[in-house]
Length: 399
Ligand SMILES: [Cu+2]
Image (tube, rainbow, N blue to C red; front, side, top):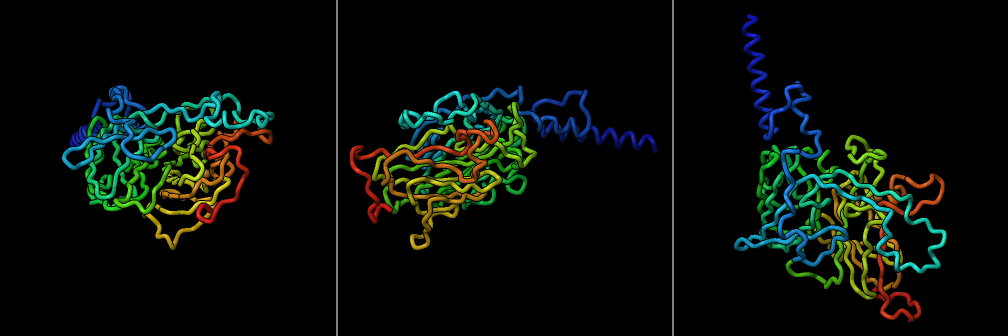
């Protein structure tokens, strides 16, 4: 009887070690670790020392489309026949969320006399975090295609744990949805998996991790996917992309706390003000801003000096007759919102989340004192056609 137990225990140890090695795929766990701790130790790691992160793929940063994602690089593609091939490498990324030692990009647009007594800049904090991203970028690069395209996205996993990529809002075959184990096995560390599908829709979409989501999405494994319509309804002069994320960072700690709802950092495209580059357009240009929200809260994004129209969601374009006007657009979790307007009003206009706690950087300035803007805050600069012209209200076509 006792002998049977010993055999059973041996079998269990052998099979669980094999399971562990399969998950781990790289190296057996140290003999000093036991049980659940040993099995899942790798999951707690930020980086696996056995995987040397690859440099970004050669088409990282190549602009082959027309959208601008302030602070984030585009991703180029190569053609394999008619298939557009993109490369994403999931890997650890050290990311500078904020740097109040730097002046904001719009600083030179503010008259010197206005700066007296203004508290932009906070304490001289510089916050670098240990995040996860794609191709050395957090968030991942913006992928841009056109309705009707067939795309292949080759995903390599250089994280210390399995992963997958989910194509959020895309109409595709089940086995391309990136939702293991229902649709595929997870992509193990060191392994590569190719997604391939045809785009039957247009609009603004997200991609994000589909494995260990609560951790991996909050670690930064996400990006935007823009699909232009075959026949655009209207010429857009400036087409911007902004991804909304939030972070829980214990003071002085570079590791993200994924277990709490107490978010204290809020970012546009992986940057907190005053590091978020401003948007610059010419008076009279037609502007589109595409917002995507991968965070757990909604973000009501507000613009000054203009009224926009909500023209699209993660369901694609909104029919003209159903579009709503506003100066604030709420972007709930897991959605995208496209807004369009004519930049008729010259000047430097605030553009920010209207949850006031989302325009601070961890409340690092004096409580109840002066707080410079941080978090989800940047500017829209509308370059005047004629700086000397008197201010005019909008024409009917512009408003
Ligand atoms: Cu917000």
